[in-house]
Structures are given as structure tokens and as C-alpha cells.
Length: 142
Image (cartoon, rainbow, N blue to C red; front, side):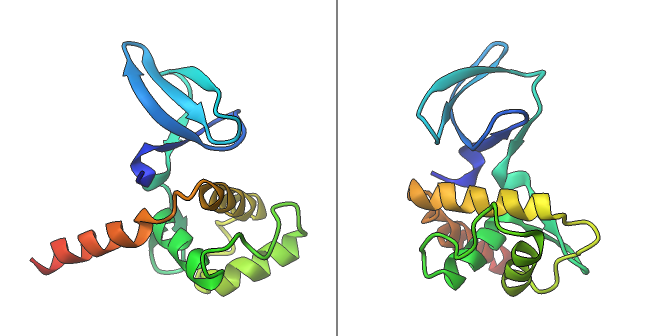
């Protein structure tokens, strides 16, 4: 499953998998407890494939950040925990993405990225990152 089908819903913990669309929104399934919920179009929902992290030069897609974390951790869960100190989280993120913009990327954002990575890793949903990247690279070459 690609990040196009993984959602972050404002006010709800964890991540959700898009299951089906309805007239007034869609049905999503939690990756935490597999419970389904109906989400209206009025709710603030972010698709993970549309999220990017600010760097000093550009915005790096979240998919690329996850790929760098996966490479650093050899496909394992992160060595830092989301509840670790602000300094420890920032130091870890600096190792992953050295050029990230410290003025616009907050510790709470880093905490979310770490939580999301670990959740996706636990559910084996990170395999598509390289495949998607390869496809995009081929499109640019053509």
C-alpha cells in the first residue's frame, strides 16, 4: 500500500488506511486498533504522500524522509522514542535530514514523523517507498 492511501486525521491518534469513499466523505481504518470510522469532508485530513518537511533549500517529501530513516535504521524501528527529549529528537532528525529547517520544523513535527514511521514499519507498509521513488526517477528520465 502506498502513502497515497494512508491518512492522518486531525484530533485522532495514529494513522488511518483509506478503505472506501462515501457520499459525505470516506471510511478509514485505524492502524492502531483496526477500528473503522466514518470521516466527513469537513474534518481536517492529511494524506501522507502530500506532506513534506521543510529544509533550508526545498521541501522534502515525507516518503523520502521515511526512506532515509529506514536506511539509517536498516528497516527496524527508530532508535529514538517519540517521548524522548526535544534535544534527542532534534539530534536524531539532524542525522536523518541534516539540512532540515530548524526554525520551521518543530520538535512536535519530529515526534509525529518518528511515531508515523514506527507505525508504518510495524505494519510493514514501508516497502513501497523505494519502488515509488524508482518509478518517479524513471518518469523524469523519459
